[in-house]
Each structure stands twice: as C-alpha cells, then as structure tokens.
Length: 556
Image (cartoon, rainbow, N blue to C red):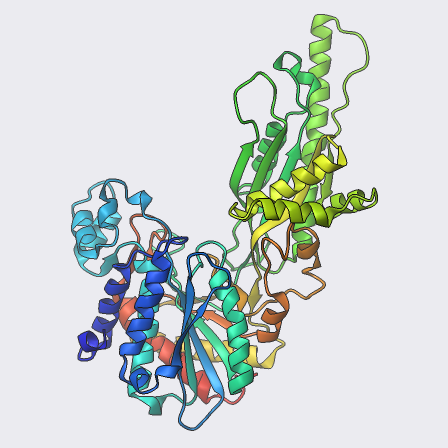
C-alpha cells in the first residue's frame, strides 16, 4: 500500500486507503473480519518505519474466538523515550449488506454506487450528494473504514515527520464492534500490559467513528468527549395459559409484553434528562412468545428486551425503572381484566369467585434468592444450561437459564423477571473534577476554535457519543458498587459473558470521538463526506494530538 500512496497528498492518501478497506467485506460475525485484520496489518507493515521496526506491529488473538479474529496494534515510539502516549483506535467490522437488495453484489463498489445514486430520483438528497462527487459510498465507507484510513494516514505522517510528535502514538484496530465489542474488551489487557512493561502514559484515546447531522440541514461537525453506555434490559414474562374459550381466566404474556413495549419503546419520559445532549430513549430489539406451533391455547411465556442507553444513570437506576414499568403494567392489566371479566360474567349470568390476575414482578437476583432459600442449586443449573448451549446466542441462553430455574422450582405462577443480557457498554465522560480530563477538555476547546477560524467549520461539542462505540471499554464512570446490579442480575455472568470492569477502571483513559462526517450509516445509502473527513479532520486530530502531548497538565 505504501508504494501506492507515498507520493499522494494526504487527502488522496486517505481516500485511496478507504476505498481499499471498503473493498474487503468484513461483516461482523464472519471470517471477513479476519481478512480485514490481515489487510490492516499488511498496510502497517508496508510503511518504511515498520519495515525497520517490525516488532512494533503485532496482533492479539481474541481468546476462544472460533473465527480466529484479532486486534491489530502498531506503536510509533518517540526517540526521546517520552512515556506520554496518544491512542488512535477504530473498528474493522461492518454491519451486513442485505439491505442493498438487488444491488447487494455492488455493496463494496464505491464507483458503481456513486453512478447508481446519481440517477436515483426517489431520494433527491442522496442523488444530489452522488452527483457532487464529494461523497464516497459503500458499506463501511462511513462506519468506519474512512476513520481507519484517517488514522493510518496520520500514523504514516508521523513516521515521516517524527519531530512533530512529542510522545508516542499507539494505533489499534478492533473487530466485533457492531455487536458485543469483544475486540475492545480483549484489548484492555493488552493496553495494561503495554503500560506496565513499557511505562506508557496514556493521555487520551481518539476514535474516528462517524458523526452525522442530527436534523435536516444540520451543518455542525460533532465532537464527543465520552461514550454513551448501554444495557440490554430484558423481561422474561410467564403468563397463565388457557383455552381461548376461557380467555379471560388466563393471563396473556403477549399482552403484558405489548404494554411494556408501549410504555418504554421510544418514550422520552423514561429517558435521562440532560440538557444539550443527544439523549435517546429505549428501543425494543426483541419480542417473541414461545409457542412453537399453532393451537388454541394462549401463550405461556414471552421473551422481550430493549436497548437501553446509559449516560449518567447507574445500572441499579435502570433496573428499578424497568421493574417499576413492569409492576405498573401488571397492576393495570389486572384491573383491566377484572373489569372485562365483570362485563363478561354479567352478560352470561355467571356466579362465583372471579379469577386472580396478580402477576409478580421481581429482578433476577430476587428470583435467585427465592430459589436458594429453598436449597435449589442455582449454580449447578446455570452451568448445565451453559454447557448444553455452546453455540447459542448469549441473550437466548440467558432466557433459557431462567426457564430451567423456573422448571426446577416448580413455580409456574404468572411473573415478570427483569434482568440484563449482553452486551453491556459502560459509560464515560470527561470529568471536571479530574485535572487531566478537565485539561483535555480545555485543549479540545482551543483546538476546535482555532480550526474553525481557519476552515470555517461549525463544531459542536457533546459529552456522549450516541451511537455506541469501543471507547466505552477504555474508561468507565460507574463505581464497583454501582455495577453490582449488573453482576447480580446478569444470568450466566462470567460464563456466557463478562466485561473486565476492574481492568477498565484501572486503565481509565480519557476518550474522544473525532469522527468522519457522513450520512445514513447502517443503511444502503451510507456515505462519507470527503472534504471534511479526508481534508479537515486529519489536521484537526493532529492538532489535538500535538497539543495534548506538549501540555504538562494533560497527563495521568
């Protein structure tokens, strides 16, 4: 790659690299992620500096990964043996290409897509962008192979101009970002190893994941000084089956699920209230009953879960809110069924006692405590379920654990069990009270102001990157006490899934997202705006890098 880009201006270098990366199909969960790691490693090893220092490029295999996916690292060391270090990081995987439909074959062909959209009259915005020539199309062009290309070009720049870098530059690329973030979590241990063995002082980590307009006509370039967190809030809903001919005597879990969904899904009333930030409500990602074939019996159980963002709220706060919504739903449903039964009974002249429509609501930890009080071996049952489902989706394994525990208890009462399932992304932000983090924030303001004067760009700084990113695993704001709600309410924690919480707290690197700019990530109209992403952004990142490395306060 170096021979192809060495004589090009930086802007053209980045586009050349980005096109090369986009051409590799690296869909999350496929061996394309392995191919992408090989491609990135090959590009790095083509740089003259790394030909002279081959030991400074290496990979880290993901422990137990059946695909053999790897993190890729490169370290540019300062000749003065300065320990202060900047991290550039990005992810190498993409979402799938099914949404391209009839042109799926061309999903990685930027030129074909530009020509296609140039005559696409059904969307004048994408048509206009395609006709301008200022946008690069293709799966991953925005999320986030252009960002990776920016890092590679800046790294190459510093290998050729080491006098501009008053410190070290560590670049890493991680797989598995688009779902469970296993690459970033695995990298935590490697970053701690490097810090201990080489004495590196990590001043800041800069991600180049994308930013997009927040409304039609929005021209701002958003810079984020932290990462939104995420929990998967889950509900196991056990109803009371009944024949449809006696429907009012049962408790339909699909009705409970629907009402919980209606209460939480896209409802800002349950979202955090933080002025000026991009705060998003919960989204339903899964809602299914467990009937396996048609009959005239109502459903026995439903599985339901939500994407739930964390900004300043603790996991315990989320758990209590989810329980509260479930409790209110079940109470309201009991009243509704009582009223419907009264109408039904009066209509057909029924006498006698009405059914009981009470539905218990409890957290997973409360459910476990009730089982242990009856000497039921929860650990043994969890271990059996995990062992019997080695290739099952970890979220479904969580539900199966609850079902087996329920079966062992013989408890078929109507109930809602609230719990968490993978993935869990911690949240973080630059804290005013931590001097080094406060100083990074001040330097960023300075760099953005100076860049705006030169380029005319409108920058807007936000605290939380809203799209979920690997930066969540480089620092975390939650204390050990606050995350105890995760450990106790996460079926199979440590067996099907875990997050290196203590190592992340130990690492504690301030994170920034200074991303490429574009539109329609995760859609077939995905595209990156080249003039900003390939021309302005690389210089902006280098300015921030040099300011932090030269500043005496921005250090841990």
